[in-house]
Amino acid sequence: MRGNRDLHRSGSRVADCPLHQSVGRLTRRLRTLSFLVFASVVLLQVMPGTSAHKFHVSVSQIEYHAPSRSAKLMIRVFADDLETAITRHAGRPVKIQGVQLAGNREVGELIHGYLLDKLDLKTNAGRPVQLSWSGLEAQADVVWLYVEGRLPGGLTGARLRNRLFCELFEDQVNIVNTKHRQQTIGLMFEPKDDYKVITEKALGR
Image (cartoon, rainbow, N blue to C red; front, side, top):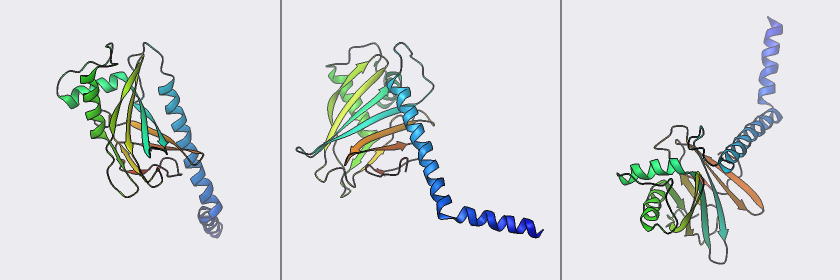
């Protein structure tokens, strides 16, 4: 009995050890990083002609342009997911796959409206950022979407909420990467998530 009590106390001391806690946090971050890399590869290397996919993922990149004090968001999504989302959001059938998207003003406006409803960007002062439409680019079964907005205070402290396709899929994951002060920072958004600080260094938080 005494041996068991000693073992229990020893286990508690190990669990409370700062080094043990640090290793645990590092392990969780590495798992999150591994998922971000894996999910990014799944989307970025999707093969032409594969209309169905098992993973519900979007990957976005944020770039900040200091001279104009603006941020540009480049969002890569699956074309079939986008078509389903825009059709539901518009309340009528909208064709995305297999049509000429470049220069299609009507489709562009519908997509922009959807993005405004699902993407929320705030300055470090908490003010909403108006995201203007910059266009799109279709590549096989994926589509690049481009929006930008003014961020006078820069990326530091700015917050983002990404709910793309969360109304469609319970397992939707939206990955957002940005480069800030020579570091690449990744955020992962799930349907349950609210705003996150873009420059948060702890991946997945």
